[in-house]
Length: 386
Image (cartoon, rainbow, N blue to C red; front, top):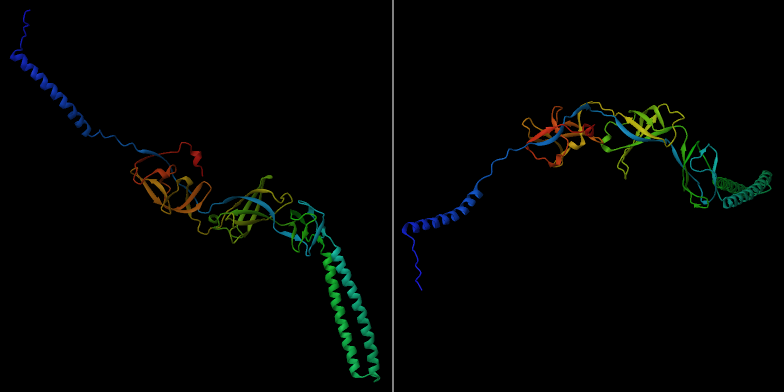
């Protein structure tokens, strides 16, 4: 076997190999350093794009705005009809919606007990009358005999006292008979006015107590147009203020009227105030229960101008009302305002903004003070109609 001969690299080749190893190690060390430098570098600044906000300018209006309110025609006077005595209701002659006349019989109670009381009172009155007649005759005899001195003065005085007592008893029996007669008459319920039965509150067979309602009677004649207002709408509402009334059942007609009464206290449930308007020239076509609209222009001596904005523009700074206004530099300013009145879809401002101000009317709860914005007009202007 021949020995295997191995060649050794020369000095140049060995130096080249060492250089390659060193370069490889330096490359491996450079990769983390490059990544570290990349992580420490800052990103290029991005230009800030102003946020678009929907703005409107306030509309100038007179300080006194008419109120358009739903209304109903009601009778000015409504009487609760009831019996003055207790008893069982045995007959009802009218029902809901019936027209009745003054003096018409509406209902009856069982009259048996009342008839018995009246008969007893008449019997007592007859007995008292007989006793009085006997006392009068005795007094006449004693007076004649006393004139002839046939009886003593004391006996005459006794006859006079007996006659006076009999007279008092007769008057008392007469009064009791009258009361018993009235009690018997009270078992019949009679209409005291012309009108319409607006409610039934008792049924045949019910045992009623004195004063328990049986019917409600809406009087014929004078009618009121009734509506309700919130407390913020009370300013300028007082008796005598002019009003216009339209009814859905009678299109094309308008009735003039005036506020007759404003309730001094709010309804405990709805927290609204009842307002009654009297028509100046009502006619027969206006029927009870008709619904419509009443337009009232509150009286206002100052007649100040107010600015009208959509209700969506309202914001609050703490517990104070405010609105967002776009300044000349395009930045948002939160400006306090004074609200003169609240409408269904709008607010009336008396202080805080000018007619030339650009007021944000949408998305007000997502804005911040000093934010750079771009004002734009609403895409659908009818959504912000006032």
